[in-house]
Amino acid sequence: MKRVVVLATAAAVSLSFAPAVSAAADPPAASSVLVEQRAKPKPRPKPPSLKAMTRNIYLGVDVTRPLAAAAGATDPLEALLAVAHEANAMEDTLEQTNFRVRSRLLAREIARTKPDLVGLQEVAKWRSGPADLLPPNVGVPNATKVDADYLKMLLQALRKAGEPYRVVARQQEADVEVPSFLGNPFDPENPTLTDAHDVRVTIYDVVLRRKDSKVKVLRSGGGHYAHQLELNLAGVPLSFARGFAWVNARLQGHRFRFVTTHLEAFSSALALAQARELLKGPGGYRGHTVMVGDYNSDPLNGSTDMSGVPHKAPYDAVVAGGFRDEWLKWKPAAKGWTSGLSETVDDTSAAGFDHRLDFIFGRTARGKAFKVLNGRVTGNRLADRDRKTGLWPSDHAGVVLKLRVPRR
Image (cartoon, rainbow, N blue to C red):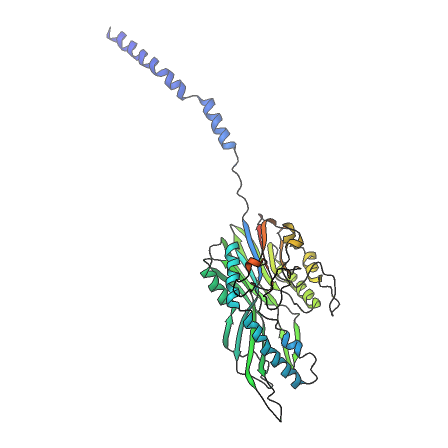
């Protein structure tokens, strides 16, 4: 009897657990769900985007004025007096275009748009020193007293605006000094000399990186163009060097090169030669490349200057070299005017912006244009002026484009 009871009990236990075991071990349904889940491909992350800006911040005055004043002089002394008197008047204009005020306007632009990298042109350092009136010291850039350091002032303004930037590349370009005074100390009968000193301007091309940007700078460099504007001041040779600054960078694993440059303004032939040097130099990078700057070449202007070269030729050379005018991937040319304000940058309207000289050129590693996600022109509205002085940020407007950086 005991054996029968044990067997009956065991059978009952076995029967009571049978449904649970069967339900828990249903292999077809469970495996099919797992297979379905594994078969779904993970979405590929979107390529990162780079926000690039080009900004000519303006020297504050037309620095060729003293040289133009001496153009009709018949002897070296007459030329020297013409240069010195015009340089004195030029300083009045420089004070009027107050960069302390304009730096705050520029910082506000940059802080609002938050570009990852900014290519700056006409970044000036103005200095003064004792007057050198006679060769061999006349025209030698040796003044040391700093009167205005545009880069330092702009970086300070950016910090105050709550959007700090760092210099990741800087290339010195022209470094020119001229005497400034009134009167004629060489008059044998009535020598006069007032406010005598030397004025020196050193110009830089600069690349800035936003402090919290995901862009990582790997290398940087710069250089000068072999083709330069050469002038003569009362027997003293003056060279107006131009060049470029660049960085190699990485954005979320995607590498690219960023270049800023400023081509010659007073000769289309020189600007064209410099554009060709640019393409062979930093523009010859094989990977993704973004080149920004003031190219002093209007693509809609086919007129020629004294050199016989069309004004649009440098622009055409860059495009023929495989680079795309990225603004035109976003808006028509007429929506992107960037140049034309007066020397005193206190224009009462924005009508002076009537052509384009400032560009963001792009070429991917496959020789294509970058995809433009959005863009805008900055510093071209009446609301961008300083309320008290009526000053614009610059005689140029800026261009900001957000570019999709494709996988290589």
